Length: 300
Image 1 (cartoon, helix red, strand yellow):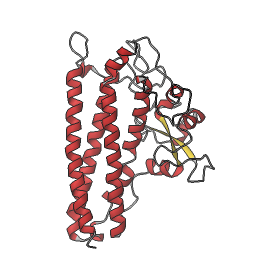
Image 2 (cartoon, one colour):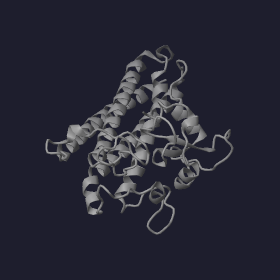
Image 3 (cartoon, one colour):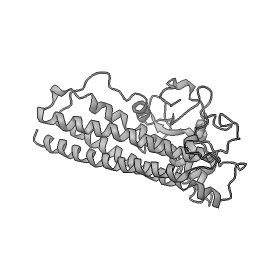
Image 4 (tube, one colour):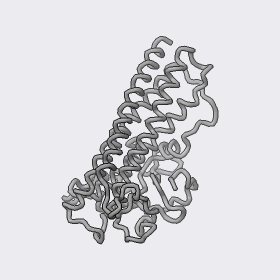
């Protein structure tokens, strides 16, 4: 299940100290730092991304540090009622939404590239089905022993994957709080000539979210096809239904498995690339609709 479906915060148990230390006690969404009181907007929280177990602790590979303000935005993206922004507020909201999605598009493309290189990278690193995956502690430390703000060592494909997956899922989750506000704009509150551009912007942004989610899911399937957990990348036993480390359910990769049991990587990679191309086209449509809306708002 997703982190949003498991919506009771008290169930998100994990090694908070390890997660905050790994992320250099910095919000991975807005960059705020510090660890103040729980009522202080600058205080730090652990936010779960992607698939999480139905119950019990959430593995640190699926937990990311965010401040309380970002935590609230991530957990409650839907406005309670229609909103009536003025021209400047609508302009800022549209700009923030497109900028956030631009960051997400870049993160998704990087994750897809990393995932499609996994078979070769793991083979080159001498990894096999019995090898252990790196822990998040390892992914938070550079080869010289220094703190690298949670970035993975470039020489470790396992750590790179775990870190990149966590960051890209957070990026995707960061969009709805703004997108839902755009969707909630009351049409009667804006000029008639702005209604269509706004609807086109929301439609393109929503479509892009779906496409980006598909790219990430297919990229995770690359890991699953290697008999690895798509979350922490720990090797899975042949008959295991769940990961013994993070408790995620095994991702089904049979769609990309040939009759002889080998993995058809080429069509899987082609599917990822085709969806990336679709997302690129949607991004262009999003940019055009945002520009049209901005031009109209300048006349308000």
